[in-house]
Length: 97
Image (cartoon, rainbow, N blue to C red; front, side):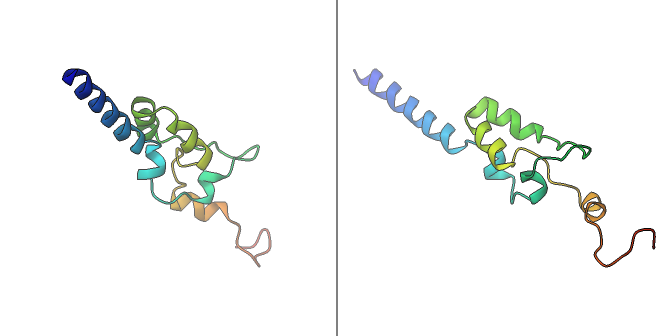
């Protein structure tokens, strides 16, 4: 009976630990940018996955994948250089430098 109780307690502790580490990209990825949240329009480059967070979600707690995909945290943030080119400057006419 003692062994069963100990095994049950260990299983519950492992379950609590794995569920607390769920959705790794949401917990450890920092703020989610607008680039990560928004689905790319036709012709725009696709967002890149954070492979480490994807694998951690699969191994530790696979329902966390749904959370990371829903929040956009599973995607890499847009590089600052690409973000500067993505937003057009207001007040500048086309063709002028």
